[in-house]
Length: 432
Image (cartoon, rainbow, N blue to C red; front, side):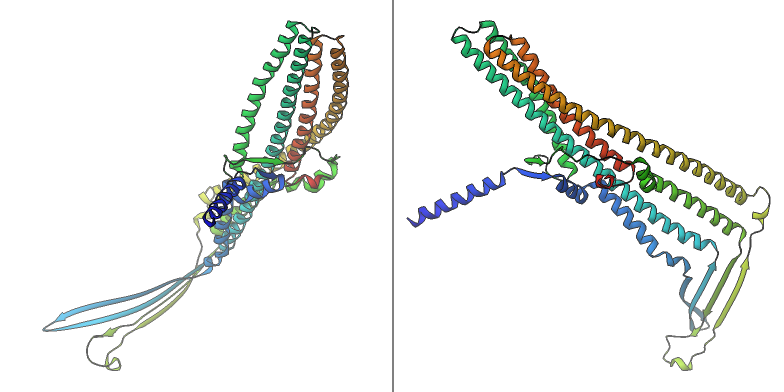
């Protein structure tokens, strides 16, 4: 009896575990973003690059350290029948100071800032990609549901037509038409299912999940209306774009390169060197150290040097400086053009969003009209006052109206996401 109870308990546990493991996982847009930000390989790679540049900047004070050298030399000399040895320890220090060191350290700081912008750009790009794909998949799910309902409705109509045929109220041709209508809808639905499953697997890979995992997306395409204020958004956020900030940082690097070239070419270099050495005769004899002879020397030097060839007209240093100045002018022009293009992109997106909102409202009206038209046509078909082709056309109009509403809502959300990215923002909440 006890053995039977134990066996039953084990079987129940196994069944429970299998049931839990087979449960469908539901993922919201918030969880999708969290998973992507934690697991995305490209973002992790950008994070590693950022930490590397931070480490280099953190220890930039090493540029101010002198060069230190310690030495130890042992020499032997065989004279007559005796061997004499000399141990020579030494220590040297050298240090060069040039105004260009400050610019070298500044460039390490600028490199960190550029990597920070690059990481933020990768992060915003990932957020936009995940949000856009998430809502695309929701749209595809809704379309699948509409297509599935359409097939079920066609099957119901086929059954009704068959019943009418059996009672002598419908012809064999009408039954065949109803059956063909059902079969015609199936390939389209199967194709949509296959496309959706492939996109979902790719999406799960981006999130760092197993593409074979059974996942259901939880969310809605419904979103409160946003009326973007182009002037306010451009004024407050446009310069926050990562590409604009990257160009600004590149311009800072070029200006630093100019200062560095001037410092290295036309500023004096101060150098300090010091050395000390000593000599211990026969260090390995039995005598005490105090009885041995010592001979040592210490030297200190301080110098200033300035390269004169850099002052010659047409020198490589002067040519390099002029080339850097040209690069600065080009970078300033590129930055100005980029700002103008970014502003135009934002304005175009806002126009597109306003159009999307109009399309959503129009799609709602068309759906209402198509639904009423279909309901009336279906009732007429049941009374025998409307033919099969008219009913099929009305059903197709209803399907199209439903899909148009879903797709117009997706386009509205997708453009809102694009607008937030065009302003360097990571959420459409800032657009309100």
